[in-house]
Length: 232
Image (tube, rainbow, N blue to C red; front, side, top):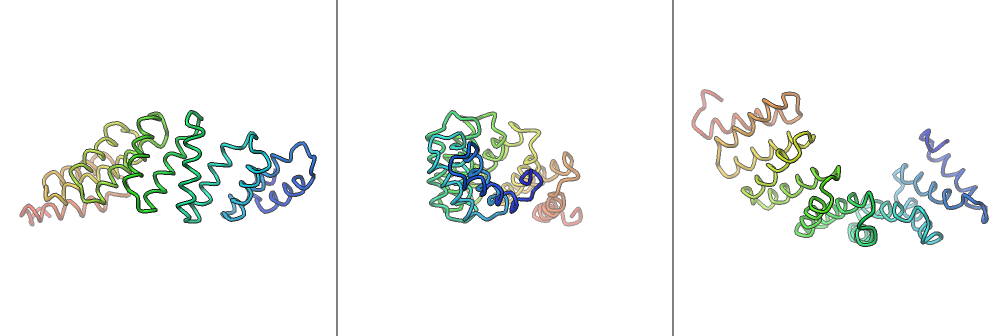
């Protein structure tokens, strides 16, 4: 009850009492609850230790999949990307057909990005899109593919990936961001008319988007670059 009320410190204490009872029938749940309570408190060191204990005591238990995923998260949020990658890789290999494994695939990609391995990140995002096309993270993975290319200054290829976000995921919250990124990519290629078109499309389709101000600035820069100062 305490856990569901958001009283995670109290929940951890209660779970610990149960966990200390060696033969208690709910010890597995208690150990898992301790780890999750610390995770919710953003105490990733104690949460990591908790999930590792769950895996150690119950290597074939009912929480193995989630404990391994959260172990990766603990390392990720602690910025220990090498260990996070190892944890997520283990999940993707052992639970390739398990519901929810797409999250581990996506997180592995994000881990590679933060560890400076953009090529491996792209492979993971591509795997997610191809192997788990119905994943709720497929649009994020698609945008990430474009962003990696954008960061490499491969703007023409980045445009193609960003456009896939717009076409394949028309209801995604990332569509405004993708349109803006398409505009920026065209701008960096000195394709100012195309950039202006993308920015205007963003304004027309998503007038309340947080990218509106940036799109307006982008349009001004495009007009100036095209020698249309009076319109800017």
